[in-house]
Amino acid sequence: AQTVTQSQPEMSVQEAETVTLSCTYDTSESDYYLFWYKQPPSRQMILVIRQEAYKQQNATENRFSVNFQKAAKSFSLKISDSQLGDAAMYFCAYEAAGNKLTFGGGTRVLVKP
Amino acid sequence: DVKVTQSSRYLVKRTGEKVFLECVQDMDHENMFWYRQDPGLGLRLIYFSYDVKMKEKGDIPEGYSVSREKKERFSLILESASTNQTSMYLCASSPPTGGIGQPQHFGDGTRLSIL
Image 1 (cartoon, chains in turn brown, cyan):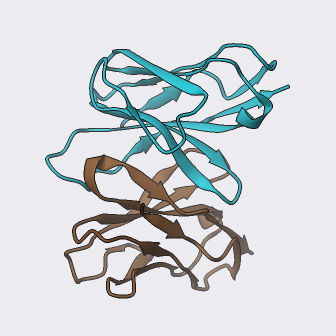
Image 2: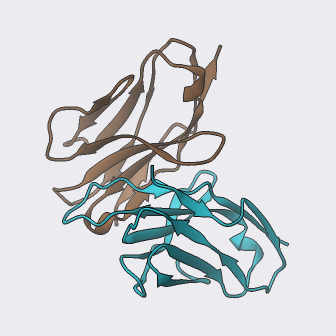
């Protein structure tokens, strides 16, 4: 079974600084997607960024970027120029067949003004 | 924008009660999912459905069942609620794909307490 591990329960970052969240996963599949989801205090989960395993280029969405290391099964999220609105729980998720997601335990990001 | 609506934000029930959690999506999505969210464990898949009247077990189906009589509605049922089912429940939907990679759209969640 696939597993997703987020080793940092909580991260703190100063406003305007950069923070990197780590995620590792275990799979024997070659074709899959990886996602980062954000859950703000209002609780609705929203997609931040996604990466297809076959694409070597790291995905970027504005201030959010990933470092995808397929051989190492690592998928970290970098938040640049952190803003107060970035404070949330962040979940790494893996998808293989069937659109079923396996989530990590989450990392809480605190942004200090 | 896709809207996934869960019927209750907070719910308090008693042990042994039959509990219904309702979820409705407005984007004609075929795929619907129920997760429970617990601190440190992330989200775990309870049940999912790829079409009306279809259902598949997820990773933690014990103690739960589901119903999908209409495409837009996916209900989670706790047959006989127990205290270890106190949790946050999240519903999600996504359109069908020939492969993978379609993001899921989530509701606001229902925080369920079983006393």
